[in-house]
Image (cartoon, rainbow, N blue to C red; front, side, top):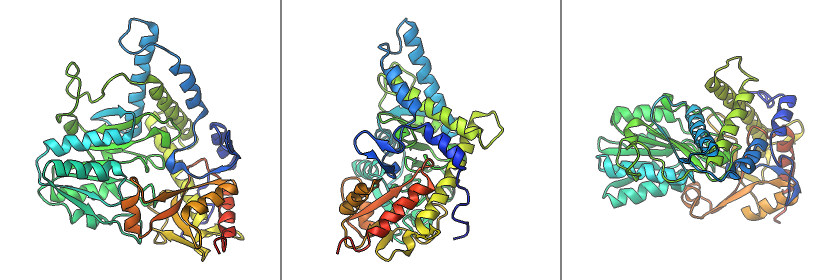
Length: 426
């Protein structure tokens, strides 16, 4: 461990201000007091997001009406799209929205698979099914080879070389997850893309950023990808909208569209403007947070500063989870705890930890945590996680996932419970 445990933690006063912006920080209507460490499944909500839902959903008008309310709806949708573009760091391309990020990824993968020449598609075994399933389905439908780079169980990620070995001059598409929602491993996307294009200069690259985007700055122009997608509900927003950015060359591919609109317009149907307002509320929060770390008045710079603050704080929390603090030992020192996909390095990881407790099924361990007032989650061999768990050599595991509003005290309580689970299954 190269850094002190508490290095980079947010100042307590700032953390109090952050937590004051959120709903249900310390309790919820169903359980009462509890600690929430299941952010990979969906974060807490901003109070401003909840207020926007009530206020904006009540407006009956939609776009295209000759009313002031309709003009407001159009303005809010446009602002939300621009705020998504700002978050992506996109100077080109198009912003696409849908009810879920999975829907967006399926549309993008289909458009590329059906319209870009090549005899194979490459992905990895670390994927969420949005990429894992869509690449397989459309590769098979188009008679293309489906190549899967193997997860490295020791690191919880996929070695770049394993991905690059699958790429050749006939690869039309490379699609991969930026960070795992099970192991927390972050793939070196910029390096992978750069080296992939040494092999196939015009290869299309799609990134699922749903897990990583809430934890670190996103810059699609710097990455050089062709598509990047994320879900606002995992970064203080609401369920019911996902955002994707697509490059100009992806936007120009044939796709499902309304014939009366511009060819490059990928958005379909009536948009729920309240969801866009909620996303703008997230951006307003991030610019507020970023102002604590930068004197710049540029909103993109403020967003980047906020996400860098978040990343440093979460890495400090991760060090605490693994190594403990003071007399409280971390998971690495608990012989009854087995970690998965962790090689001892805390760099290139989000604050997501996969583990099991000796003598307890994952679901039972999660229940014990709930009884102790700590919310974590378990992943099992279902439609979402089966291929990842198989690669890790387990059928289920417990997942802790933190965000920048979590505190050292919450992590310490999590560790206390983990210690108490020693021998619980005997």
